[in-house]
Structures are given as structure tokens and as C-alpha cells.
Length: 344
Image (tube, rainbow, N blue to C red; front, side, top):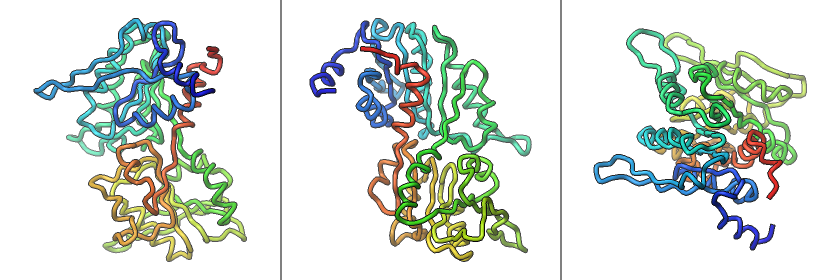
């Protein structure tokens, strides 16, 4: 569309605007802006002022009921910073009360997912408690239950911690990597996928049904634990280890990934890259992977922008390469909300 049309759409809003409304937590603004920019005939940005009273409690203001009533609403949130949970929980709780048509919630990274089970008494599985807190806060909309999208959740069982009052939509970022690998392989040759443990193999193997793969495992030998190749998938006589790519759902300190890289080099890999959906990297541990860092050596380190707070710091810093979920998410929302039929 023309610049004039785009400008007119930005200023429209109001009761007669049929577009879906994206309400975003501040750190998700870039993602929201990207979707609206690419699909401005289908989405508009909602107005929210996230503020605080002097005592620190949230002071949130958003659009009048008349602008939201009967609309499809998308909430883009972030669970990266647990101290900002109450603000976002409050927002998703009040949105259905504005007589909206439907609510699609997106928390790309479900922070507590790694604490999903109890192996002994006296331990809290926060994946369950947070899932139930979140679900209990979301009232029904006119259309029915809200939908909730999460990317590459650490343990598939976590989705069942959410009751049926929320419709779960498990998103996979592997498609972004597959698309990118086609261009890489065209210039650098075939890539072999390495799964750092059995859990990663279970999560990601279905996304790479035809690509040769290696499953690594930590095996205890005496007092130490050593990484060994425990399985090969889609292997043939002409499969080589020129370029191996380790794939996992998230990275914290990155110690396991680096151990896996060193093991793969000792097995004969010439280049080792990595892909993780969620670049958690607490305490800026990503700096260890930069040239000169104690964990340098990855050919490329692919991440996505499910955690914009971190991904924005990695942009343009070798070996990191940020694959954007923006368009993949937009298309999925357009399909759910039947926005392709929207005629303006």
C-alpha cells in the first residue's frame, strides 16, 4: 500500500476499525511493530501506558472499552523477567471484560518451564504453579477460551498443566532454522544435526525427519561424565561431519553446548554451530561465546527473538545470528483470527 494509506490506517482506530488489536508488553514492542508494519491492513497497535505509583505498584492505563468492544485482541507478553508478571497478569485479566470478541495471548518463552517436575517431597514445580496462576486469571471471551502460544517449551508435559479454560498452541521455531539452512547448505554443503541429549532429540527430531543426526549423551565414567555419541539417525556412507549444528530449546550458561562442541570436534567435526530457540543467557553469559571468550569456537550461534531483552544485545555480534519469529507468528495469528478474510 501507499505511504498515505499506511498513515491513514495508523490514525484510524476506533469503533469502526475491524483490525485485530495488538497490545504489547514494552519489551515486545519491536515484535508488535514489525507485525503491524508488515500487515497494517490486518493489525493495529493498541495503546497502553505501563506506569507505576510511587510505592512501586502498577498503574496501567489502556484504550477505552468503546475501542476494544467486539474486537479480536492479541496480547504479546514476556515471562523473561519474573518481576514483571503481575503487570501482565493484570492486563490479560481485564481484557476479556472489555467485551472483546477473542483473545490470543503470546508468551514466546515460558520462563519456569525447566522446573516442571518434583523428584522428592518439599520441592515446588513452578512450571505448574505459574501455569495455573496464568490460566486462572484469564476470563472467557465472547468467542470462548483465550488461546495461549508458547514456543519450544522445555518439557512437553507442561502444556497439560494448563486447564481447558485456555487453548494451548505449541509453536516450533525449527521451521525458521530449516528455511535458513537451505541457503547455508547451498553455499557450504550439507549440515548434520546434533542433539545434546535424549530430551533434545525427542523435542526436535520430528522437525528434521530427513536430515542426518547425532544423539549425544553424558555417560558417567568413574568420577567424571563424558559426552559420547549414542545414536545416529538417517546415516549413510556419504554422510560427513564437515558442518555439525547442535540444536536445543534454550541456553543458560552454555556449558553443556560448549562441552558438546568440543566432543564433536574430537569426533571429527570440522565446523560446529548451534541453534537454540530461547537465548536465556543469565548474567550476560553470552559474552563467553564472543571472539576471545572462554567458550569461543562456534562457527555460528543461531538464536531467535523470543526473548527480545537478550536477542537485541546479540544482533550483529559474531558468532550470533538472530532468526526472527515475527512473520511466522503473524501468519499463525492471521490464520487463527481469520484475518485473511478481512476486507477494508
